[in-house]
Length: 438
View 1 (cartoon, rainbow, N blue to C red):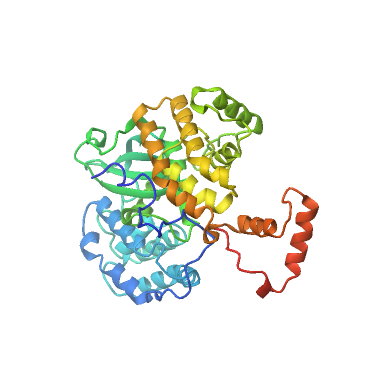
View 2 (view 1 turned 60 degrees about the vertical axis):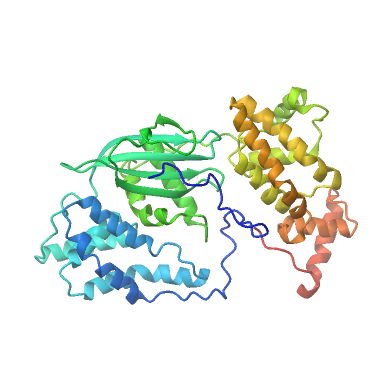
């Protein structure tokens, strides 16, 4: 069982089909041939829980409920179809359970009450109470499900700080500890993209990994707050690189983390934004260093580097990795930045110098510096292609390019406002095609 996923970043794809980062604004095309599954299929899946529900181990039952819920998490449907399906899920599911004459009705409701988020979980609990008061016998695990004892927690981190694996162990009385893990991905917007829950025979910190990982103990509540925030952030996206294991264990991971958070959880302080003064001081330090021979503080490429890391990422201009390089060169710059021919030519050189400066300042070993600089070389060809490809432009960049093509000085507010007024008066068919935000 791996401690971290197979890739530190986004899924690799063939040249020309590189996938962008997640977007909560761009729904799947309505032409996608995926009708919503009929509710009858959902009911059939739920009612097939006889084997798991007859278990005496509450953890096995929780896993069944979580996997069942995960089956219907972020289905590959057009946005409107998915939204309607998810809104009808609670009523349809609970109504079907109410109408069922199966002997496991109460067991299903108890399992959903222990794992499912609102509104399904509380509604299932209310119905379970009614059945119990009517004399329906509870399953053997009903008195303890959802209330395991917390054992310990720790975290792992890759050398670049791209991802943090949060691990927590819990134990039901008389049973072996089980482990839940949530993988927090910094580069993908601070989401939890992978997770697992399982009985483990030994401490996972002793299991060899494909990458060098650092481990340390973690405050349980701080861990839980970050994981719950990462799950919530991911939930706003229409699509993302979630693993199948995450879908299956998402509900259980969330409910376990909720056990570690007080009713009024403390708010983790976010890092202060990097001020203009701090950015200027860091750039000045860089240009005076041995890594920046011949470079000047006014170089616009350094401005783009700062904007990307400080305003569109996790706020640390010194945290670089091969994945961060990829996101900067072939995602951020093509969408957001307008570079002239000289800047396009010089960017790989400047970026490699900054990467060396940043990672040496952070204290990373030379091999990690070399690996990150190699990523600059690896993405240079695609960067130079995409940064001038109108299909890759974001809306602000596309409009800026159109202004400059019309001879507008984009630094002249009056000229820009006049151009925009004239543009907005044009009929829609004369405005051209500008991309939606990506």
